[in-house]
Image 1 (cartoon, rainbow, N blue to C red):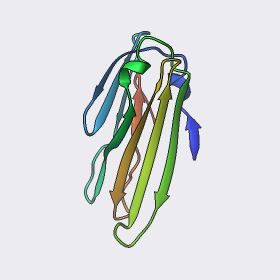
Image 2: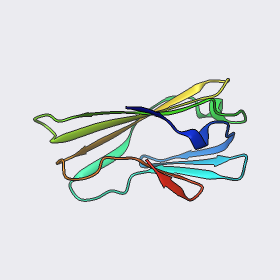
Image 3: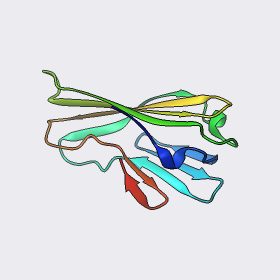
Image 4: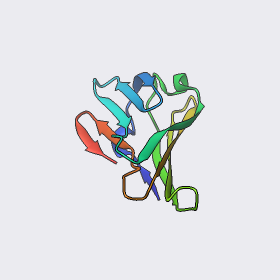
Length: 120
């Protein structure tokens, strides 16, 4: 599944703070966005990889903001989900990979809180 994160398109990032479990964006418009997962029992969701330079996203409008997900079930994990976020400006791009694993009964979804509006 591929989807565009419409509120991000045209926004200009001024700051990005990244931990192993969250990404916090501040925009020139005064708005903000947080990407995170509310951890629960028997599951783990975390930032697995970041490709690109965050500075390439700062100071110019975002022209690409997409999310792509892939889910499998296998013998080692009952449920495994990768969520790929793709951000780009005319200066460059950043791709973020989130990995979620669980016993299949818990969410592996990354939440986006954009200026108080929560969506996935």
